Length: 160
Image 1 (tube, rainbow, N blue to C red):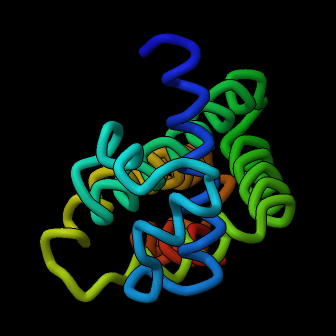
Image 2: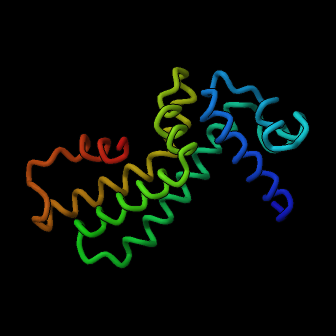
């Protein structure tokens, strides 16, 4: 995408994030997103197939950036404990600074449509896998309990 197209794409995603956080996915019409973004309704469809595609793209872009921040941060970590602390710090700081993203990631993740849930799950998977990897490393390093339920713990951390 050219920089101008990328900029408009980001403006639309920012607007969608805000509108979906305020109204929920089903209460958010494309027209509301377009109005918030300051673009014509039809412009949305130059970037996204439909409202579901907007939500999926929102998860892909925002969680992708978070995972990138995590990876950059944990490269410098001395241990799994330090890595987990860094991930939690970034997770909480980013979501505290962007309340709309917090609402969208924690509430809209639980969509009723199975197809939409699966598509969003693909975006969430790298995030969950990274946390799982850190927990398993911590168990191997004897920093975390041997009987730690990794699957439950990773979900608790993500859901926090």
